[in-house]
Amino acid sequence: MSDKRWLSGLRSTGKLATVTFLGALAARLRARRTQATRIGRHLLMGGLVTAWPILSMPAASAQEQPAALSGVWSTTVTAVEHPGWSIEELFQCMCTSDTYERIAELLNDPVNDNLSAAEIMRAIRTQNSRSIAELFTETARQYAADFDHADDPAIQCEPFGAFRSLLHADPIQFEQHADRLIVRGEDMASDRTIFIDGRGHPADVQPSPMGHSIGRYEGSTLVVETVGVSANIAEDSLNIHNSDEATSIERYTLSEDGSRLHMTFTLDDPVMFREPLTLQRTRLLTPEVQLQDLPCEAISGQP
Image 1 (cartoon, rainbow, N blue to C red):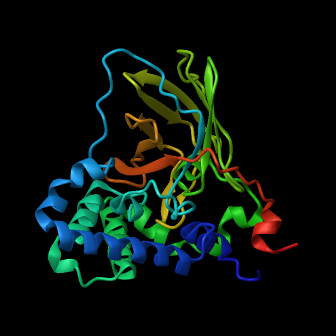
Image 2: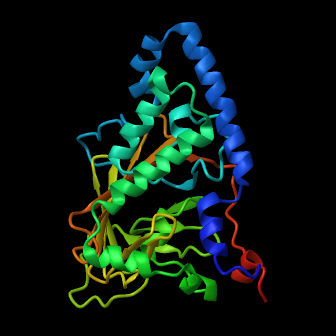
């Protein structure tokens, strides 16, 4: 592929063609609207919270118990046809809370019943981009305006850093050990080590692509703190870049049946954001999925 914007297109659409993704969404949306007409809109609205784990995750137990995170977890981008998704989850993204409110409005207000799946997706992307951009500092605005995707270091086969690895939409795999968690991604994503043995961050941590991550359990929720991440692209499709002053907190909570993993990611970067940015996404447990690790050259089509 000669176009050096290949990476942005790949990451924004995942491994499925856009037409396939939207086709699956459209089919589920038609079924949802038919059901809503049959059983009554008030029942649909009443069931929203229980049907959408993103809006209502179980409270952590009082006793600290490591969550059973081992396994492969997928997003809608690479597992759109999985029967386990609710219709609301199919329209989710790496979204702000304002965007999730907009998704609920688009799917549950009868005035929007004339909108197609593609139109809903465009409205969601617009809302999410606006919510994120509202938090940009002037430095971030200028950086985003000047950034050329042809300068993406991944085009030169440089692996993703910590934030980009955890925010992109490909499947991830958790490996649990007594003193650490290993988080593996696909293709350009870098493996991450999260220490859970009670250690703190090094006093003299130097910025690096992966930084330094430590975790602890608050009830059954895993809380991960990451520092020392060097300046890089944090999420290309959302035009999020981080400085080397950025720190993050991830919170991972399992659903009661263990089928869903809800992540809340908060990025604190005073250089790029006027206040911390918080994004959310839910993944499904997909033991049938095998992680791929294609070489950069195979993805880009370049020698």
